[in-house]
Every structure is written in C-alpha cells, then in structure tokens.
Length: 277
Image (tube, rainbow, N blue to C red; front, side, top):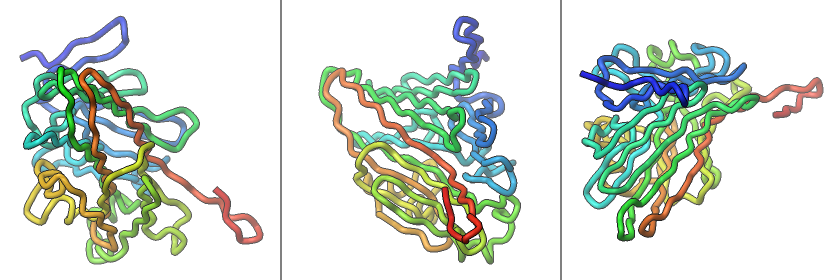
C-alpha cells in the first residue's frame, strides 16, 4: 500500500493516507523551543528540556498509538471531524500531510469544507504557531463550530506520568480574553508559564479535561464537541487543558484564517526581587 511520496520541488514528504504503519513525525524548533508533530497532529512541545520543561502531554506506547496532540475538531450539523483524521477518525473526502523543513501542513476536506493547519516554530520565539485556513468549497453558506485542543503537561514529564496523588491537586489555569494560561506552580516554585491563544474573539472555552472529554469518552468523541457547546470550565487541579470554541459562518467560496499561538514565558528575577519577562 502506498502512503505518500517525495515532492522534490517543494522539498516535502507528502502523506496521502493517514493510516501509516507507525506515526510519521516531523521535528520543528529553534534554539530553545521544540515541537514534534505526527501526520495526524499527534505530538508534544517543550522548552529546552523535554523532561523538565514539557509543555503539552504525549502518551508513549499507548493504545491507540499517537495520543495526545494539537488537535482541532470541526462540528457541522451532525458531522464531527478532524483535519488530521485523528482523533475523531471520521473518513475524510480528502486528506494530506506535508512534512517540510521546519513546518508541517495537514489538510482535510469533508462535505466541501476544507481545513488546512500549518504547524511551525518561528525563529527567535518561544512559541509554536498553528495557522488554520478554512474554506467553504460549496455553493451555499456554511455554519459550523471549530474547537481547539491541547492538554497541558505539569512540566516534569516523568513526574507528570507517575505522581498522580500530588498532580491532581496542583493544576492551575487562568483565562484572559482569547488566551488560556497554564500557570501550575508559577510563583510558588517556578518562574515560567505557558499559554494558548487565538487571534479572534471566542464563543466558549474549556480548561478541565474531564469536563471536555467526558468521564467515559476518549479524544475521539468528547462531550463538549458532541454537544456543540463549551462548558466554560476553569480547572483547579486534575488535568488542565486549553480549548477554544469559535462559531464560524462562511459564504460560498469564502476563506478565513485563524492563528493559534502555543507559547512559553520565563521570568527573570532582578536583584531587587522584581520579575521581568
């Protein structure tokens, strides 16, 4: 079975079937900020140290493989799908992943609505960009909802996977407009925090994983996406996440671009005790 091919002109490897034998991963990064992204949008991000500054969660050797990731869900009427096929695994009318030098583009089409996400880490910035381009390819107006999703790691990747008695009590998030901050242990014992933001007014959000996914569900069928409504949860402990919900309407042939930023901030203590960014 053929899963893809080399595009020599664009210096990309193109994957045309999401069900690859194993996740096919691209490495993105600059001097300080790094990201791993698979052909189905699985992977994780970290700052300098993959163990002690892990920003988002990833579950190794899990079933199913290649969980967790930087996911987007689209709900149009009763149809729910993801541009990278996972985690929903709805059969797409078209799927393509292009792993390039320093970027990955994942695109999917369902019912004449197309979504293309470009993942990249800009030089000199402690951040990762998720540029989402949406296009209505039909001759009629379309209304749908877009949900973002990342799951925060509690910084120490090994401790995050083992010390549950402690971790379930310390998760901390804050919300300011369209930005969700992950601030677990910030100021108490750490000088850094992370955030996930979008350049648009949002219509809902969630920061608590159990509320978003549902107690007996998986990432493939989260409660919030099935209902089409965010619960506006603010996590205190347990497993913090970041999810934005946007209600979108596109006229026939119309395109829209949204820019999501997954970032890391570290403060420096001056001699007088004050902090600076």
